[in-house]
Length: 240
Image 1 (spheres, rainbow, N blue to C red):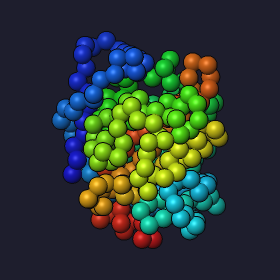
Image 2: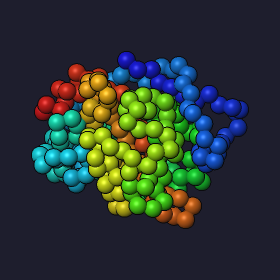
Image 3: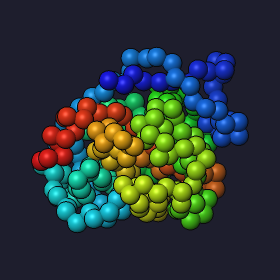
Image 4: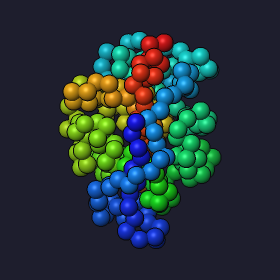
């Protein structure tokens, strides 16, 4: 099991996440009991997808209660897109994040990032958080903040300050295309499966990706959150 990690605050004042973009810090871990290695229900809510996550994704499945929507399934996981108005209540384990996101988004619109989100809003998720910023082409998107546990679960494949053009792992070959779809539609993304982990192919996770607007109203940010999963339960889910 993996325990959660949170940022040790410098002081008790509320701080915009913009503060941490201007003054980058390495997210440190403090022990909490909020996150454990968990399993997920067999029929997690599905949604429309394109062939954007990984390679060789020709097998498209229907989920039990997906309402006719589609998901991409491949040998190491499942990926999907959700419309901005999608009911997010079925995303077990992400309730605090989805409730926060909905509180910032009016009429199902993509919420502004720097103006609306405080770093303290993400208490308990700091180490499991990844912030990407896209000012130009998707492959030039930059990982601005990378939590310690997010980095650890990807075993060095991702690092703070890298661009998506630098991602060279075969399982993430079209990560920039996946992100481009989330930004341009815009929509919400989710991946459940096994991570590219050097020497350890059994590391499983549930990842939620949420778009956000910049100060000019353009959708240029992705807020990504990761939960470690039980590998055995994940393998059983992906076998159906």
